[in-house]
Every structure is written in structure tokens, then in C-alpha cells.
Length: 284
Image (cartoon, rainbow, N blue to C red; front, side, top):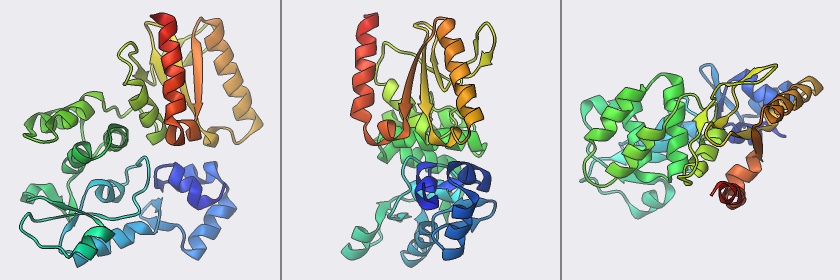
């Protein structure tokens, strides 16, 4: 897999170690040399982030939503090709600029903007208001994982939202978890949450006869394990052997393991829903 596509599947932001594990050191170095991947502090990012900063400057606005999420170093379901820019409610933006970018009208308080970017909490709530649940959950999970937003802070912030978007903010805040390792796991959990018969726990501890494991998603009542089976963890024979050992231990302990690939979760969610629907029918 080429380095740019690997970075996109990792959420648009990654450390050197994460990206090398997903592709190769040679490919990453080449992408940096030719400019298709850039360094931003200790992280590797797509060049679009700098374009988003310029767009916000040109519009005399601030980076918000997914553009702000990426600025804070958070992984997202899909890196945004267009900049998200928030401007004052009474600003007049030419139609051409509105087509080029995601322009959002909002009057932001002083504490909601940091260095030309919406604050971490405001960013999560903005995404919860406007994005589909799976995309917003991926942002919220990443925000909690980064430590820039605390779970209680997010719950309090969502409770203060009034009017349009309040329900969406409360839903994201309720289900957000910093235990999710990446957007892949977040999106899979978002799909499973559509099924009230299931209750999954991210990285829940499972003790088998020979191993103590932390599968991606655990439904204890029904002894289901859902695994987001990412390519980046199968880069060696040893990694593959360990996976086989894990899944065998779970099966012998009476757990049903359901595995989904990145392509199935991110590009074919209808297939994932079909599988889970059939699974739920078995326990009805």
C-alpha cells in the first residue's frame, strides 16, 4: 500500500511508527521527499492541512469541524478534501468560496477559539452537530484518546447545547470512548450501536484459560467479540501467529468472534449491518 493511502486509512494523521507499520519506511520517506506527506510537529499529515489554514485566513474565519480536528492531531474517518471554516453570522461570503469550502456561520466566544482554530471541546461538539454519527464518534473518540478533551467535560458541554444539534451532541458524548484505538474501531462501534440488542465495550478485558485479552469490542451478555481486523497488525508471520492464538483462545472459551476488514467497515457498511442483523436474529 502506498504511503498516502495508508495515511488516509489511518485517519489522516499518524506518527512515523504507525505509518511505517502500515506501509514501509522507504515509501514513507519517498512521500515526504516529494511532498505528498508533510511533517507537522511529531505527526505526519496530508498537505491539505496547510491549504485549510490558508482558506481560513482568506475568509477571515477560523478552522473548525474536521479541519480543526486534524489540526489538533486527531484521526478522522475520512480526511476532509475541503476546508471547514467558521465565520461570523453576519459575514457575506461569495458563492464561489462557499462552493470551494465548508463555510459555517457561527458567532464564537473568545474561549472557543485558540490560535485561529476552534477549541478542542468546541470542535468535538461542532462535529457532533453536523456530521453523521460514525464520523462524529471517530472525532470524539480521538479527542478523548488525545487527552485534549475529558469525558466529563464533553458530557457537560453537550448538556449545555441548546436548539438544533443538542440530541446529536448528547448521543456522541454518551458513547464516546478514548479506549477506541482508531477511527476504524469507532466506525464499527457506531454501526453496532444501531442494534439495541447488543451492548459493546471497547477493549474489554476477556480472561481465557491461557491468555488475558482485550478485543476491540466485547458484548459480555452474548459472549460476542467484534474485531476491526486492520492490515497494519499483520505485517509479519509472528503477528499472524499471535492473532491465530488469540482467536483460538477466545473460541475455546466460548466466545463467538466476528471479524471485519477496514474495507468492509469503511466502504461497505451495508455488509456489516447485514452480518450483525443475522447475528441478532440468532439471539432473538
